[in-house]
Image 1 (cartoon, rainbow, N blue to C red):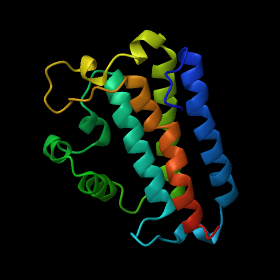
Image 2 (cartoon, helix red, strand yellow):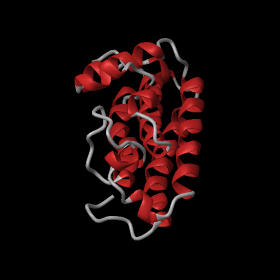
Image 3 (cartoon, rainbow, N blue to C red):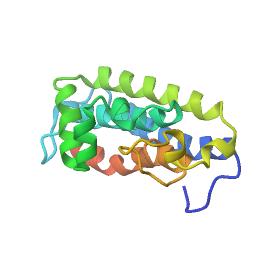
Length: 172
């Protein structure tokens, strides 16, 4: 996604879909390989990355559902309000400890399908509204970015961000 706003909902969905297709092409190539048990320097497996992506995509979906992002992440409000992204990620990772590649892939696919359905049901005007407009008066949600940008950043954009880490774990 460029710094430009999408012209319409279909364009936003196309941007999201590009990241989704690229991620799945990589995951399809890894299915059944020994790389699935490997860990990166932080101790994360590929499954951990996928569960992380699912949680953050659900956090963006929560905005569209007018729920706090920490609910989508499955963490406590206090953790979210800390603003400590590493701690937030660690807390979310603890929730998924021991998740298999297949389970994590299913978790991400479900989160993605829900997000795509929610985005597809909204006109572009709704997606261009600031995040804070979805939860007015919530001090845990002071985000002034357009909701569609946050959704893209936690779906297609986030998938692209994690691809190099997933490839590194796989030894590529």
